[in-house]
Amino acid sequence: MPPRPLQFTGRELDVMGALWANGPSSVAEVRAAIDDPLAYTTVLTILRTLEAKGHVGHVAEGRAHRFRASVTRDQAAGAELQRLLGAYFMGSPLALVERLARERAATPAELKRIRKALKRRLKARGA
Image 1 (cartoon, one colour):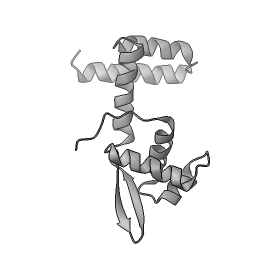
Image 2 (cartoon, rainbow, N blue to C red):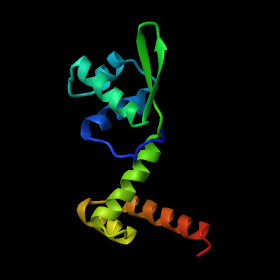
Image 3 (cartoon, rainbow, N blue to C red):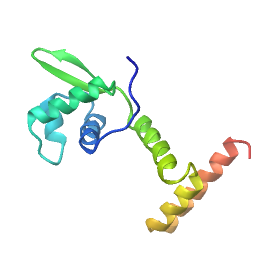
Image 4 (cartoon, one colour):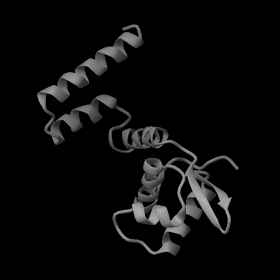
């Protein structure tokens, strides 16, 4: 079965964040890596849900399982960005960047890095 679209609930994102940060982990390790304490069975349920969606896999280690992310943080971020662009910015990257510039006080150094990144992107596209 192919993976479902990359969209996570808040708790799923907490669990995925632990897997992305720490690599393959047991339920107990994932639970320890999450700031907000969750019951062991809750973490296990979330991991099983993510596995059913195709976003997580596991290998058996004795009686326990070691879970691993099947998608990268970058893949998930790209999918979420596309969703945000469509849902809130009518597909316009310009609208997203303008909103980001208004909402977050970027330092002059950050703005220069953004400008350089945009110039690199234009050069790569031959524009």
